[in-house]
Every structure is written in C-alpha cells, then in structure tokens.
Image 1 (cartoon, rainbow, N blue to C red):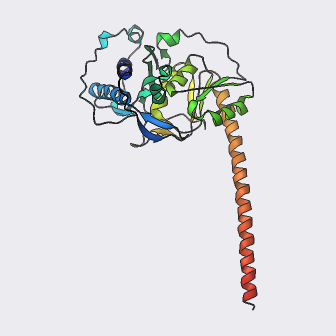
Image 2 (tube, helix red, strand yellow):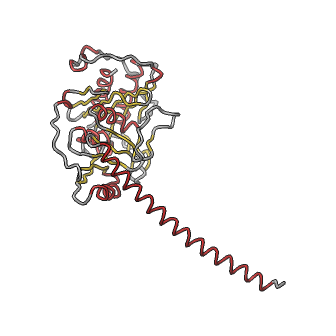
Image 3 (cartoon, one colour):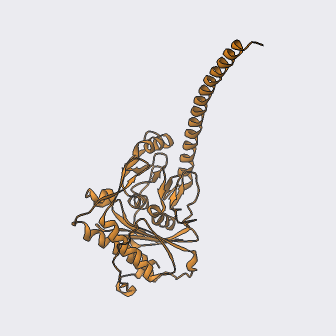
Length: 328
C-alpha cells in the first residue's frame, strides 16, 4: 500500500505540473473561516481524477476520501506497476496485513491551490495518507515542482531523504513557529504569548509544506488554531509520527481519521505539530489558550452582567409606572 500511495501522489503531481501552463479555469469554493477565497482549478480536478480512481481501481474495497469531487473524470487506466519504481528502502520493510474495513485513505490532489494560481509553486504538494482504525500509519507528501517525495510509515520507517536530514540544535524556550499566511495575526499573538518576544514566527502556505518544515527542522512548531480539513493534515501527521513527532489538536487530543459519517472531514480545534519537545510545546500552547478562554469568558460575563443590570433597571421602572397608574 505504501508503494501505491507513492505512485498515486507522484501521478497527481505529474498532472498538476502538466496543467500548469493551461487555462486554469479558477473557481471558488467559497470563503475560509479567515474570509480568504478558497479557489479550485482544473489542476485540482485533473489530479483528483488520476489519484482517486487509481486508488479505487487498485483497492476497490477501501474507503477513499478526496478534497475534490467531480463527475467529469475520464476513465483512468490502471497502469500501476510496482516493479517499475525504485523502492529499495521499502522492500526492506516487513509487510503488515489489515482488514480493508479498517482502512481509510485520505488524499489531497493539490494542496496550496491559491499559491499554485499565483505561481508560488514551492508550497504546492500532493498528499496521500493511509489511516488504520483512525490512526495515520502511512503518509506521502510529494512536491511536484521539486520532484521530491517524502514518506513515513509508523512506527519508524521513513524515506531516505528524511532519514538523511541533519537535525539542528533548537532553542526550546524560543522556538521557530510557522503559521498559515491566511490568518497569521491572531496565531502569531498566541505564539509570542506562549513562548515570549524572542520567538520567531513565520508564515507559509500549504499544510503539507508546513508539516514537512517541522519534519526537516526548518520550524519547531506548526500552529493552526482554527478548523482544518483532515486531507490537509493526515499525511503530515503520519510522517511526524514516524520520526517520533506529534500532531494533536490545540486541546491535546489525538486526531481520529476514521470518518463518523460522510461529512466528518474536519478538525475543529486546530492543530499543534512538533518533532521535538512535543509535550512541552503542547502544554505551553494549551496553557496560553486556556488563559485566553478564561479572559474571554470573564469579558463576556461582564458584558452580560451589564446588559442584565440595564434590563433589570428598565423592568423595575416599568413596574413602578404600572404601580403608580394602578394604586391599590
């Protein structure tokens, strides 16, 4: 399944590159929670068709969930050949057998679509994640414009280009934090409040790009505080797990990738992704968010109290008028 996941991610990436110079036919799926336009292009659909139906042809009994949906896909030929690729690192791994009913495959045919339309191709990835009983076990992140593919298979197998990464000494007290370009402001404030003014906070696009930035040591923490889709984060979660990292919600919960129904595609509480000092970083962020929640609740309570006092005075005045007009 890992070999197929790599093949499918790279196939989608090939379609994304091939479609780059064509008319993109940019449409909008609406606004994100941060009021940023959420575009979709012809490249998203072409990559989706190639990835989704290749997986369905190879594993017809497995649930595959994609970010995109279209009925206009041409019939995809299943030309996958496991012997055609160089998989020496994978061939050394021991196979594992699971029940198909326990497997969910999440795919993102084109992550960072907005940046793709702007020619910022460094952020663009295609991703495949295999979850077993809700746990992300296999993750593949492919950079189509750099022709680089990264993968992880828990508990500890990774692609050679991850194994060869030299980890730098990090400043635990003042980490490098990456946040989304689309809503950097409030998350930056949280990062500074949690780790101090000396913390470096950078913004980048693409959930896959940011997760891999944590894996390769460019960033210490990937912090996202609003809702995020599971196809955006599942592959990165699996790769982080394979290098002893963590991805959790901002409440500290592990993410379950088994969909409860056809609409269960979202993590509502945001995420904290780390490779080192996982518990320490998560604890600091949760503590700071708890402080904010207490402060907001107090302000809301004070505002409600003032409103209630006003209503009470108004009601009492009305009663007094009624009493004067209707003496006993």
